[in-house]
Length: 231
Image (cartoon, rainbow, N blue to C red; front, side):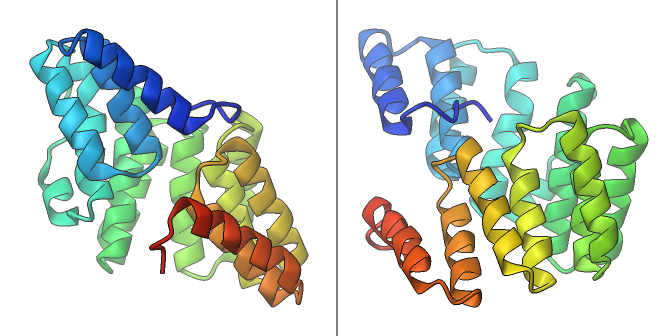
């Protein structure tokens, strides 16, 4: 993730937009803004900025994964899966891309294809936190919650700053009806990516499940303030 947990996301966006007003051909600012939108899972806005970054001569190597992600976050999973992983990207990006392909196949209900992508990722680097996260996602889908927890623990040993891992550990705890533990894990995720409305919604669900309505309402109000039209 590009945004620091201590950053005010809107301040970052305003600063980058101001830079682009001064120089609309600032490819680095376009690239940064596009990646901020990706952190927010705003696929349409990210695609617009990243395409402008490409026009401004930002290298294809720096843009390949990010541009593919814009399709994923727009829910255009078939388009995303149709994009071939280029040979010139680095190993870290390739692993993240493979895991994202696995997630797309999971969303489409293609468990076998998802498993194949996750296996390719783990074969690239068995210690990669993204690859281990892929194994955890597959294990959760198959109901192997203890295995999933183990994969996530190993991933956190490599990268304890990765918010997605805490969020998934929260999912595992919720599936085991350990709602207080789930709440704590979602809190850890929020500490690392406070802009994620999904983590607030998950934590609210864990609070309701544990009978703590006040905490749940507090998190729902955070989401409502940010996105008044959120269902």
